[in-house]
Length: 87
Image 1 (tube, rainbow, N blue to C red):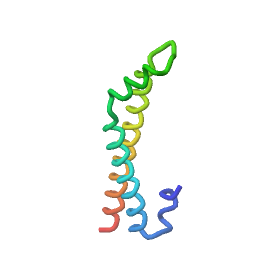
Image 2: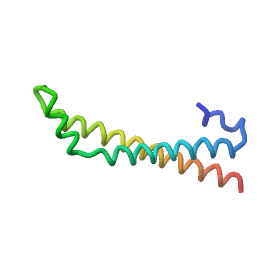
Image 3: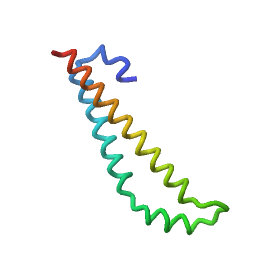
């Protein structure tokens, strides 16, 4: 919602907000990409279910990475659009 009403505030404030969004997304990607898969494999065997948890836990991590990458790309593009308008 903040971006939707950003025409009402200083563009530099919106750029700052978007930069934080980008930075947070990049940090999330870094964290998720550095989860040791051997830990997931180890812990998934400790949970007793009919099916392997590992595949589903890995899919969840991949989704988190994909969402964070999309958010980072969106924030970067949005910053560029605002900067073009400022020139």
